[in-house]
Image (tube, rainbow, N blue to C red; front, side):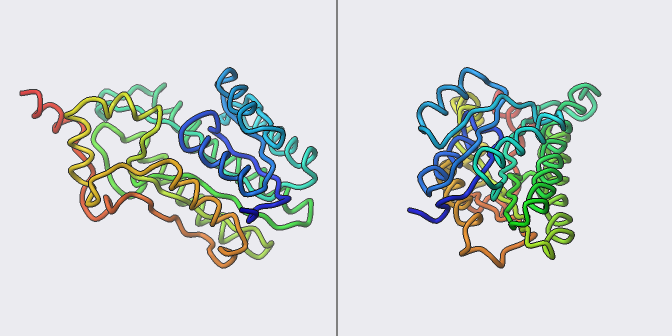
Length: 262
């Protein structure tokens, strides 16, 4: 696998889950990768595991300067910045009427703001270097499906999809593609605890026609394809990888769980 040989990449949220799977797949496909995450210990372990073409960098994606510095470090270290994957993000499950302003702002700062900074500064560097590149934004089915107790996350991910479309519109003429991936339920360290709850697992699997979660490696395979020349005409679209869950509704995480307990 050499689809990305010689490419310089940055992946945020790379210390675990989907981000780690993408960084791993990029290394296997021949790229060199700066892995960004807040978890310094996990980042060190993943960087060591992936070898010499992986460089860990502790980065808070809600801080524009830190994002820009990480992207420039990748360019300076590898000689070019060819791929940016904006994967870092999180959400909270809280009824809309009980969601605090602080939680709302923190979700928007990381899940939406981090993507904006990654697209903005990734594009700037690609334009400066005179070498086109690809920016991949990790969205969610929640950009299109409302979820109980997830107003902050759903709003942020809907914004991510629009950043992808606006980025494609504005940057396509410069040779920069901006694309997205919208995962459904993916088994990661973040979802593992929730899915160990039988009622929660039943709610999620009940709306997935394939009756299984998506593997992080499946998301990574799509990220390799989208970053490769094979996808050179894909721009502005967000690909759903969800086992078909968008054909149904999103699980009722508040009322559904309440009913399961009664």
